[in-house]
Length: 513
Image 1 (cartoon, rainbow, N blue to C red):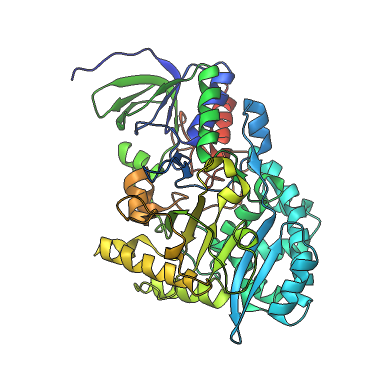
Image 2 (cartoon, helix red, strand yellow; image 1 turned 120 degrees about the vertical axis):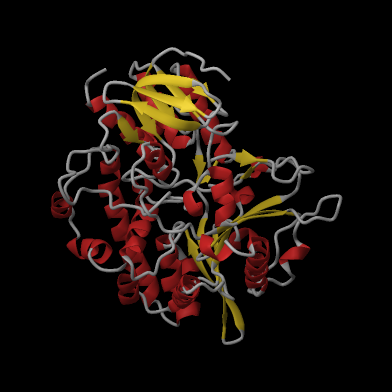
């Protein structure tokens, strides 16, 4: 195919996930002529809704599934009509203790039921009081730090000096989160519930500071850290972002993959795999930074593996629990399975040694209890599962077999706490196939271009400057007209739009357009 000339753009944004759409819209809103180029046939990246089971008209949040980090400031500034819904329960953790089936209930607004639940599990109220104290202090930290995520990087010492709880600062930023949690809480189940926020999407020991960073991002989102259900599914967010982008004049080009970048500090040409070339003055790269490094013939940074299995399910009914709790209460929040502190660390160490753990920690979310609109009048429920410490390396050989083994072990873990096997509650299609979809990290790499299935692209970074990066946005590269606007950027990762916002503002700060 011959090269097709196209008009010049002020900015080309590569990658049509939520970050790319945010960056493109801010830039177009500021008067730039912007094109957004997406490699796949549709927008959204990991933030999509999808009819996974053809016989059932239910749109699942197929990959990303909850929203915490997306700031209200971005929604308001871009005029997004997108809502997130609070869950009445934060979490429920079934526990078999001395042959008795119990459960740790954590309400979103802590009340007598939560206090009694802590007492039954731990034998006293000390961990309940410790929980109240710890998370009330974290709420203050969230309100303090969240606004800085949409500003140039601030110096760590200045941020530290401005915070009124130096003890908490030390516990979260200066010692491993595993140590902090073991000092604050006595019960292993309680410790595990806290530590899950340090490990979502992060293949790490809780004694590694990468777990601290992951924990921080999961508890400071939007100034509250509350994990909320996207009304209408994750696709509703992308639909609104696309609407806003088009409203402000962004030209959206899909199904075109960039395979060459040429130019200098004054102008760039990006060439697609089918021979088209688009020229621009500046480039925002909202895809994986390793792909960018390859195109620029630069050294490719090393990254740790993605480490999660994602399952999507449809249920004809909610399963009953051995503990006797109402399943509508147990599943409306985060349902923790085999996630005590010891189980989490044991699974990590086994996986790091190359073995698939026999007990795989995981957690389940039933979005349809909070947002019935996603299932309509089908009478079904959705169930989303996220499993920990199942890194990509475990699936490189015998991929299909090891995925089946992991699935079997995860479901066996759930079934330990149910009156009847989960299989009895699943919906089935007309061919007798269970409505159960499983994605391992390599599947996510194939389907979403996530490097090694890493949902954060690489290691998360602390949201401040520790060296001479003070005043930068964390989006700059060694090329003055190329900016990182995706999860690979500083303060990237998660469904936040923060990296897209910051790339746009870093570019506009150049003042050359």
